[in-house]
Length: 374
Image 1: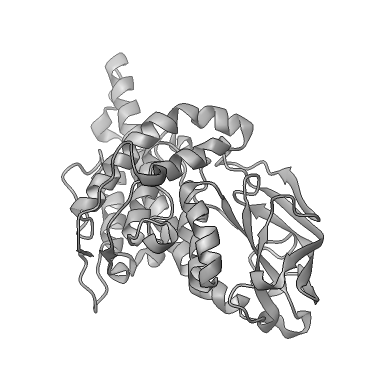
Image 2 (image 1 turned 60 degrees about the vertical axis):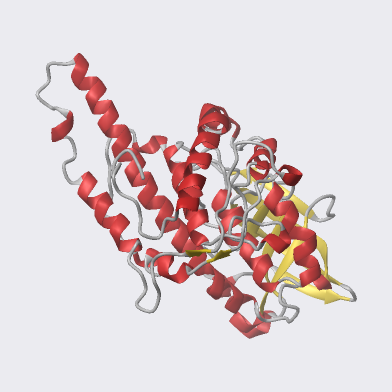
């Protein structure tokens, strides 16, 4: 539910997810919104905010509980992204970390690596990022020039990346590199760099952007950086492009969710502004006459991604109720039960959402919190 649609509840949203929504809204209202301006000035969120979000059970919600995650589905991630928009977030790289990169590890890492990496990602002890985009190549992943040459038990990585979200804080970095530059897409592999104390790893300048000023988006450089061979995702060279194509759908989905949530937040903010202005002015421009098409457009966008796929039911099947306490949980994390999710039903059409732009007043005060590019 939202202020703009107080009586609407998505057909996929369970009682469990409704509790999560309230918990996330309360947490962000207390811990995030008061810091937005300061984080924007610093071009990064406080590092300990990641730990606080992890302790509140708001990271890696659809990663299996076996690896420290919430055991939920994509809908849980979507709800947190929506509440971030309502909280006027402009810097917390939740989507990159939790919704996108965590699933590269969950899908392609070995069981031992999952047990070593993912619990720290869920707790906020480790921050995730992915390095795709390079200067001069834009979004052409087949054109990347970063190389990873095998020497014994390590890959020697050389190259540079730009527009990397979570680059200041990242502890684990998935790197798109060419292990065989002669093979085009078939020569691309994904390597996981553990950045703490890693020789040859350099963080470049923080980039000035027209929005998301609190996001630590910056350049990265690799100079004879050595990454263990076992950190090759999937264990076989040349699989990186196909791994990216499989996982990029999640990025498109969460960007669509965030975009619609930002539109709703912007309209809500504009209505509030108009009401406040009308109370102080004799102007004939009343709140009811402001942007009459904005609410219907947001409503259509919402309906477009709550449509179930033909082969699935829109309601996830919940085996046991999950709990989202405000405080107090084993190991500092809100634990949850297993969710038998039908995520394709809840998310099948999010990637194709095309919501007409909503441009009410002060729309720039909110942002998706998801990356523009990686």
